[in-house]
Image 1 (tube, rainbow, N blue to C red):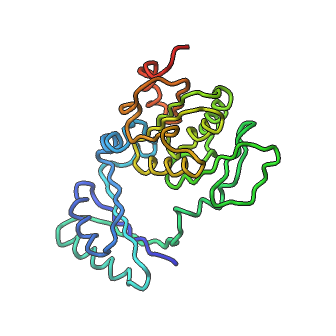
Image 2: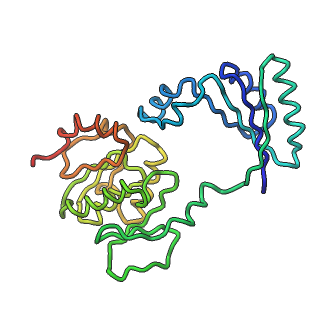
Image 3: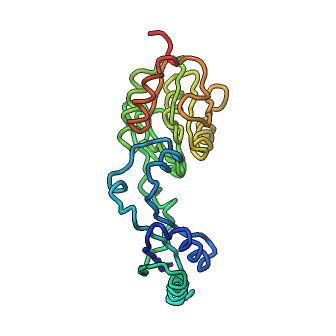
Amino acid sequence: MDWIEVLIKINADDIEVASDIANMVVPYGIYIEDYRTLEQETWEIANIDLIDENLLNKDRTKGYIHIYVLPEQNPNEAVAFLSERLNEVGINHEIDMNNCKDEDWENNWKEFFKPMNVGSKILIRPLWIDDYENSDNRKVLNIEPGLAFGTGGHNTTRLCLEMCEKYIKDGDSVLDTGCGSGILGIAALLLGASQVTGVDIDELAVKTAIENGKVNGFQEPEYKILKGNLTDKVSGKFDVIVANIVADIIIMFSQSVEQFMKEN
């Protein structure tokens, strides 16, 4: 099914009023681009200050409102209504219309996520694939990342998995800060760790990590997932700590990580 995207360009200071008007056209929400407080909101939402340069270069004086209308809902009428109301309140604006496909973006990526070998011991298997090759008898890590980070396809995830394979010994305790889908903690248990604690600031990631643990046969107390920021809810010391997160957070974390590490 094709949708019509109606894109409204306005001065950023008019976003609030223009958004109220746009919400009168569609009952199911709108998409707003407003870059005036980009740094502040990025820190408040994700606790990071590492921002893509393309976003930093956005024109802070302009704002954009996206709404989506089905062709049978008469997009031209919607545009006429929007323009009339915006003119009434004195908001300068430009309106464009574009066709866009009704794609299931949340699930289409699954087509490209296939079973993969990592290192010499692990095979990552998407939950929806039953037919796969494991002739060298690898440890199978079953995963459904959903919207959480961690499929094994990203280079940093693969590197962390390879380091886990190299350094984790039977009986080790492991802390995974920023655990995402739970992939590193689950791998650690498959590789012989006796206890894993994972932490993530995102509630969806916590839920996903717990579910992925159960699918692989792990739950509390050997596999514990906490919702929190880095180590603010963590106690005790660990043999191995993994942190597959953005660089500036790792740099900050390195200042305090020692207190959570066992001797030697």
